[in-house]
Length: 285
Image 1: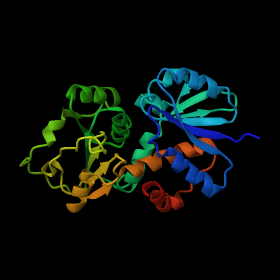
Image 2 (image 1 turned 120 degrees about the horizontal axis):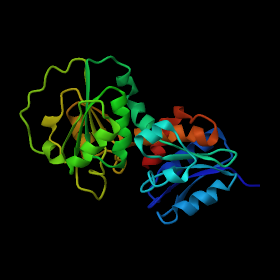
Image 3 (image 1 turned 90 degrees about the horizontal axis):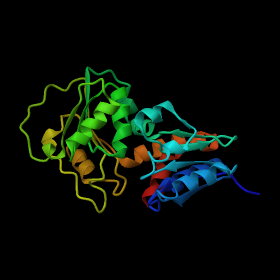
């Protein structure tokens, strides 16, 4: 007898923590199902989708780079939020074989910020470093939450294009990443009832990558600093932010949050989030 299963696809995919996360939750809930990792190349993506569509045991997949946009034309339906973001990271198979694409990155990113977002602010500003695939969901999510955005990238034109596409109604700004490297003597206004976020949405600071070069004189007092890098989990950006007494959010928060949304779509049960502390230990040991 076969068992239902879901999986994560990408190229590469060996580094993915998704099998550990979903496997942990399946075990806690006693659900008789599997979650796997499957290496899928760009050339093999269409054949993969066709074969899984025909498999009644396949519940769907999480999608990592480089397939988040390439998979969209191969699906039957795109959830409106994913269509607006322009990227799919979760595919769900219905019983009739139709495939729907979702983006769980945006709600996963916002989840750890919810206590802050539930407060009333006079003004909200986010400085976002990076204009790649991860930034798409983050820009869209924060624009919907009333933030004025400053997106910093090596190519400011790329950042400007993302803002024009994803957040056309705000007075947002695109700047060079290097703008934040040297110290500044800018005098910040009184930040009472202002929510400031500083977000690394780039691979900088990841193991094997150069560090993110940001001088903290550019970081407003009372900012929350969020780094989506998961390896290492405690990045130099977060370490310095904590040393300065700022609130921090690490990459596992977004990873677990987005996985929980996908898990319920795949297996029909809410992820058992009361075990988050134990799950974090599993993922970091």
